[in-house]
Length: 192
Image 1 (cartoon, rainbow, N blue to C red):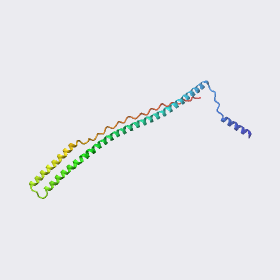
Image 2 (image 1 turned 180 degrees about the vertical axis):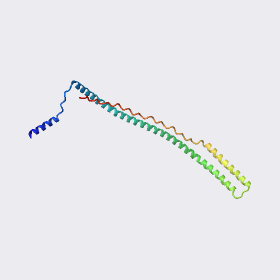
Image 3 (image 1 turned 90 degrees about the vertical axis):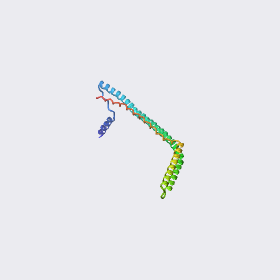
């Protein structure tokens, strides 16, 4: 029983130990050394590749942030300028309408008075001469009212002209995502 324990413990000691490298031909040693050097270079190239990927991603995101920030500022400035122009127009149009309203009210009153006078003159069964006189009075009254209105509007000046909205800014081309570098290939392990 003791010998069984001894053999088992010896086997476990050998199992835990690192394998003993095989001594091979000098050509094999050179191949192994070349492989290890190539593997070291590959690890450096792979790290540089990964750094380039991350750097490209960071630079692209920064470029896109700047692009969108600039574009949004351009649109905001365009809209603010257009809204200011519209506000100026609307203020001028409100002032014009305020001056025009009493002229329109006076014109309407004159036309309403001519209408009422005509209806009173033609009520009942008037003679032909009374109808002709009513028509002539109506036409003269409306002509005076219309002429007075047109003269007053002309004296008021031209109404403000609605501005034409300027063309929207042209959206610039978005930054191009940089091309990823070529991923290095791992060296092939030499055959034993």
